[in-house]
Length: 283
Image (cartoon, rainbow, N blue to C red; front, side, top):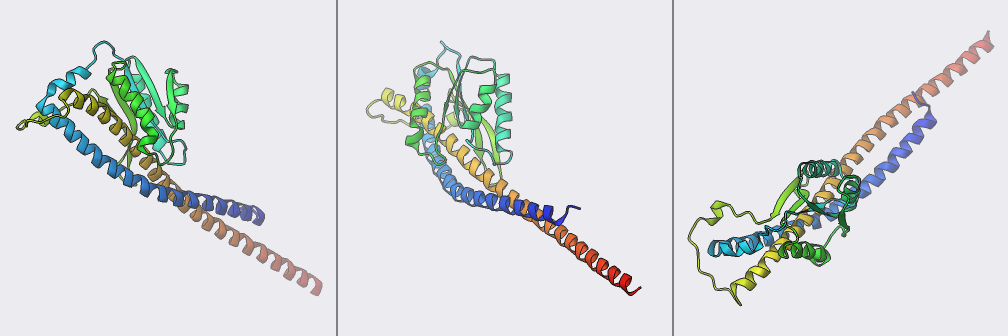
């Protein structure tokens, strides 16, 4: 068993760690609530936008043909990761999903990375050519608009034929899953085409509406993926720091018990020495 000095030093170290993890837990809790609200609002808006796109397709499926580019096979991959660690297995899970996807995809790729962790991973891989961006931990649409707009412009102009997103999907505070989403070309399933088609009046005309709708669809879905990633990061960090704080407190209790036992043994030993000395003097 370690001596009293070592035990006291370890207890102080664990207490210090506990205070740090508790502070990080409280910060993550405050940010998580705001991030979850943003995710909820973004999904509501995205659902409405997807509904508009579906209605336009039902009435005029030919508008999607102009966005199908057969002159290039370049796949634009947007990889969204946290800037920092201390969020449990979130980073390793998204890394595993991205690594598997990149190794299986043999097409010509253009990689765009958001987040320092993703930049670190891609820089070590064979895909050396990539662009990287950093955003705040509570981004607005305007903050990421230069990223989303450049990606949308590349697809609309025909520079790339596909857009795929790799990010952490926020399910709940305790569950975040890596997700690979094919954003473009738009996948319209058969069930979306069923039903009676309605006649729409487009102002100023169908071409201008479709040309404005498709980039907006791309930008909003990318922004929603960023919000999902941010909410996943804060939620995972909250859970990880809460577990770390609980483990530190448990370890402190165990070390305190060991220290008390060591102190008791020391006191007992000293008493025995005193008694032994007293008996020796009597003899």
